[in-house]
Length: 249
Picture 1 (cartoon, rainbow, N blue to C red):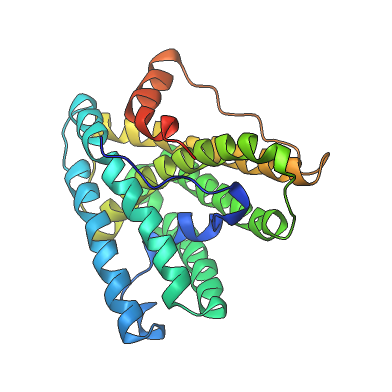
Picture 2: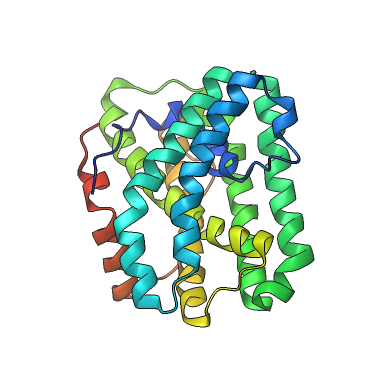
């Protein structure tokens, strides 16, 4: 795997942008961007779409998992780059509206088309995942408005890395569903099971974000209990992201 950018403290990561911006739709959102912003965001989004497109064409869970291990680091870097660049080239009020609209439209897409595309179990998990992402996004202002004691920065950096990996891991699997649904490209049942498992890390991402808030405001925002994974699931995630988790802050 390639190395990723060092993680800043959790309070400086734009949680909503990290999770929502990759689903901006050219036909709905790009007309509100400047020419430079549109070009940059479109270019990075296309980099993110290519591995997702390859992943949803896999026929078996084994093939999907192997490809995911190969491409996830690059996908992670692209998501981070999209978030960072958007903050520079898109005015803050516009960015906040785009993130909110992106989440609302994802919910509507899964509610209206998810049953036909994937069945009830996947549709419901996808809607819950977007709802969890919205909760993560709502934590962002509360985290960013609070300063962090110097003695807590090391713990915060570890939470930041764990949050980012869990969040983008979830985002990758959500993108697989969105790409399949928007392009009417069915996902093979065995692969769909792996995608469904991947969505569950949204809860883990929320837990890390909530713990970051607790470092700043003790006693607030209780954790959601992490979704239980079996040992094989845990090993796959740890193996696929080991380089990221060990990257120094």
